[in-house]
Image (cartoon, rainbow, N blue to C red; front, side, top):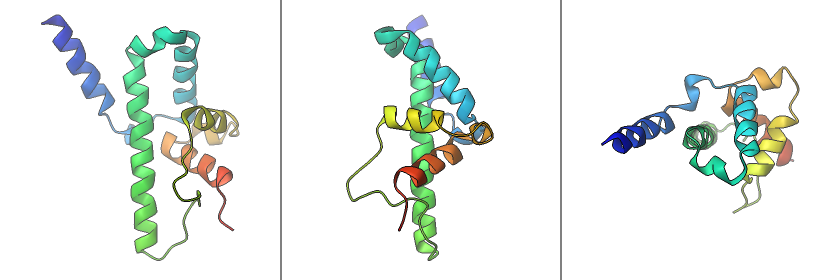
Length: 121
């Protein structure tokens, strides 16, 4: 019964929208803490939460991409067909942002990483 409560809580936290404005810096700090745990990070309560934040930011950017396309606006980034950014590349890109950019919401910081990684020509 207790495990069901913990699992339910993890599900609710993982479903929390990235628009709850987790900043890039907060995301990186929490991700670094998980990395320090090594393989045990996969069982840490924060793992599904951060995974959910990353997935939500990705979904928001895809929706924004579709809306920009429908409105006839240029895309933010132009990744080659079928190519995506890996989690380590995402984390490295976020870590390379300026201190001011690290105060942005995760979605906006991730958009900057994508634009730098896959610029439109």
